[in-house]
Image (cartoon, rainbow, N blue to C red; front, side, top):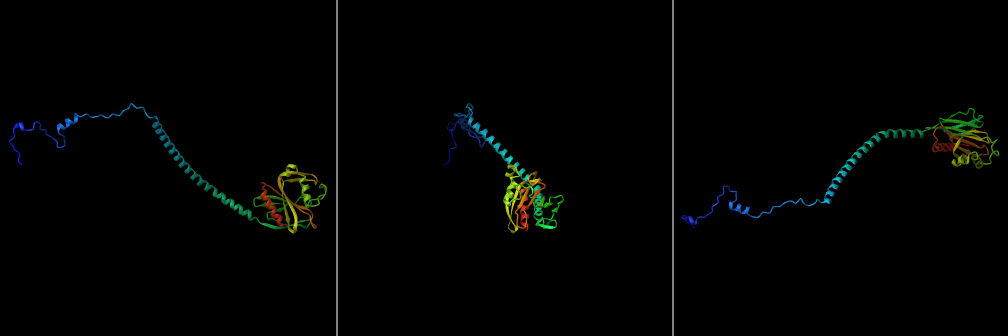
Length: 273
């Protein structure tokens, strides 16, 4: 349908709006938006702060700091421990090798059979370390003295046949009585420190080992003087062909009862009658 172009002035629209930009709104629309009631939102700062949330925030910050500090400390300690372990390994390894070598030398200490004489008569058949030498000069009758080393331990060894001329009540009847009389020379306190061990030697000869006894430095038979060095004494029973005898072992340096006892046990097992 075609529109009639011949319109009168009264028939034309009274307000004609023009747009200068294709993206702008008509002016009437703008006026309409401006005249509406628009609510303005405001942030209220009149409310009091919440202390609970402030405390939580401070606690979180503090806890975070503590955790970081602990982690850093553990890291430093781990590095220090690794360094110490490395240095300790480097330092100790040679010592372990040296100890092992010493133990091998101690085990391989050679012993040899010996015949010990008094007045050209053989009175002892036993084994001693090959390093032991006899030094019986100025020794009492019936005594042979040896000095030597076994491993790293230095000893003085006395092989003797005691004389009972001045002994209390004379010669004892048996081994048990002899041991009992020997202990009477000690003070009650010293006698409590002594320990004993019994043996049966070759040919069923009885023997008793007394340990942790002080060295006898002077002996008149019925009186004795004791020194400060510790000793072990093996008392051997009398037989039909052999008098009472004893073996005294005196460590010359540090006293190790375990080492001295092992020495005496090996020596005792080698005695032949």
